[in-house]
Length: 452
Image (cartoon, rainbow, N blue to C red; front, side, top):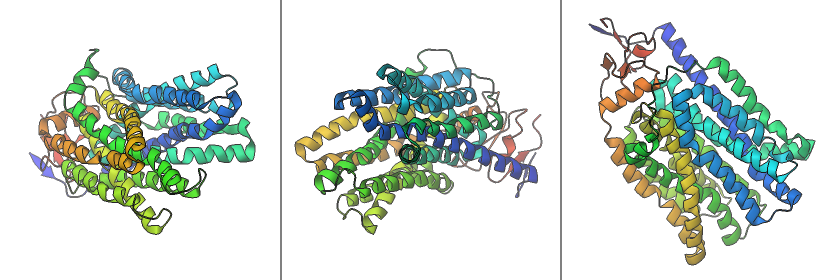
């Protein structure tokens, strides 16, 4: 009834290569979109001077953008589940890139606020929808696909400030909207490359997000929020540590270098975890990397800034702290087969938004008990995150993973006709009737010869 194929056929190899190329293109689009978002922080000093804004007003602008781009992602995910992830991802990328790219030349505060709000909504629409598309085009390597997609955004956030300041320095502030070009260009290309959305089967209940938060997706979101709290503590707290405790100036090169190393290593950590998950279960991998992250996070505060050991510890902290994020996102998608984008929005956007709010408390603790105590408290969030992630990921019933994979593949049936897997730790293979990609999912290339 079944034959085992030990080597992929040329058509399968071509299909896998095409899927990898599509995910790489999505990652490039993510880089372009987040480069524009990342450029906003670099433009804020010039915006404050232009409109004579104080720290409170600047904080309100940053908060407005964060709310529209992060906290709105669960709602945007619900829209993607209803109207199609590909359609919303491309639209969101164009809207976000175009409007946020105009922030540097906005002539009035009202126009600035409008660009931040609507552009933020575009960013909120793009992220969960595009993450779903990345998994859908490469279902046999879901963690790697999501990790590669996430890596593009991390690099974009690091490159955006450098790019916009380079444009402003050499071509003038009037040409800073050029930062929008990569995002729009890649979005147009992706519209032609990425396959159309499958028929949507998302329920119309308005309580879907609430129901997701009450189940495993909610517990995964708590774990993701704890991870994001540690990441935010590093990104926002280490510059304060370097200036207030170590005596560096506000424009010291070591600040930018430290953040760049951390972000680039974070991108590499997600990719490496995508490979490692083939050798280790997501539960063990997530718990191990998060617990291991406590060592380099602590060393960063003990080593001399700017030295080789300091940057090695910074890179290890970035890679280990964020390696679990793709595993958490994929697990949430598996547990919400008919609300995949909504679950993704919760894991990506809501967790980061809540972590930003949590950092307010960490900052207050730093003022009261010392900055080192505040930073170590924020870093320690990875410990309960490891315990919670291991507990939820360990309870991974085969039926849930099968249904989730079928939804990610765009499978038309709720219950796959035949499922082939070596064990629950391997990716199951859906063989729904009419789904050409089904039998090439499993690494050993099992193929059904009798579906009737």
